[in-house]
Image (cartoon, rainbow, N blue to C red; front, side, top):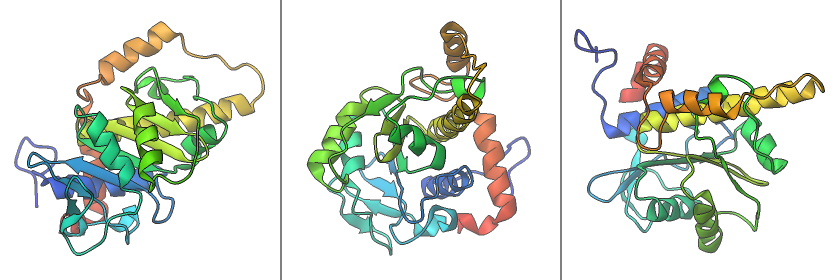
Length: 245
């Protein structure tokens, strides 16, 4: 499908958006084998989700499944992750968000394992909410409803969270916002690790400057950088147009 003149990407179904987000974030390091899950709230009260059996880099639109608010598959040929309680609880406590994703990306997970929020050392690292939530009590997998609820509550109103001894959670009002926050979180985590590994000369960005950058690019309600999402979509479509199938 080719975009119409004046459009940078073709019209995408909700399932195609989710499949593309899986592919795009896999390239950004969200690729811990079959771990990781994304949910996308729909107007009818159901959630679209990636299947448990496939890694993110191979998901196509036709693979996306639909679940109800109890986590039961109502449409699709695959099964849902046992860890779906995390998403169900997040959507319950955060009706303002439509997209929730969780994975164990390399650099974000390092900071989660150290129970630290990565500082802002560069411009891209400032493209997410100033306050990243930190959930410090790892009591087991989020397939347990009580553990999932505790993690969801700990995220609060943040756009990103680090789960100690576990991984990262990112939420967004739109697919585009979740994409921006996810790659900014991983960039921030990677760059902060390398800067601090130098052992000297680290210079954090002034909070006022970081907040100004965040407000230009990202806000609690909407992503203001659609070009980033569109360029990533075009890259995936060039690499494998069958993602839309």
